[in-house]
Image 1 (spheres, rainbow, N blue to C red):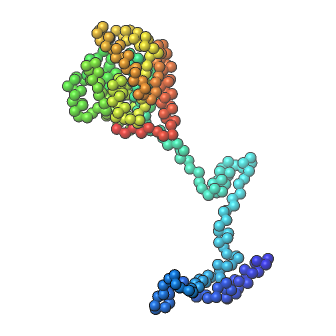
Image 2: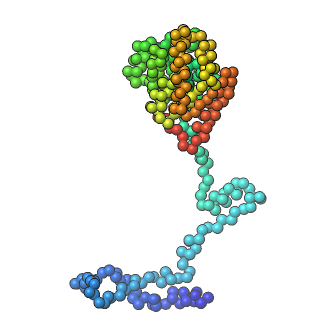
Length: 303
């Protein structure tokens, strides 16, 4: 009560007892025509004159006091309130509106590179993967080798002549290419651009040499999966069972496969394709894709 009377008295008074001069004075302006500078030898200093403030500044009933207080919004009981009513009350209390935009942005299309030794079952795994998973595109590799029985041009490979393949290299139409067992193999860029624009994940099937080249080109922007048999013995038996090579070619493939297994550490994931358990291998590949989709920091592939 005493404080309120004091404030009221100060407000009604024409003279502010705290300040002797109502006229505003700039303490840094010297009215003398000859400015005087303070030095270490100066003995006395003129006190600075205070600046007077308006009487409303000292008013106890200033409206600024209420403006600084946050608005009080009653929030109904969650047990009895209507959901929409409670939702609006929470927005009003927090001074914001809740966005309906997704908290997690859309996933970037993935580029999945699947490789492994010859005869490990890359084609079988990819074929099954295409059957069970949506929004995935298998990039058909171009090759200069001859078509094998049962293969379809444009589905298994794009079969071209060696001269046609060299022309593709010259025109920079391939993401990567390699000379494997005397034949060229390469990945066309056009398919990748078109399918990624649709939001589809891309699957590339390449040999070990091609995977090494893609790793240099793509770095960490693609997912590299190494497909392997359960043992060296099982791998050799699969190569023998294909019956697609001469004995000389078979010897080269077996020796090459033994060396290719040593490159496993250059890949991001390894999937064992056990004999008779194709579905298990495909599920593991799907798990890899799902794990990559759930990452906070997505891979970003640009071609």
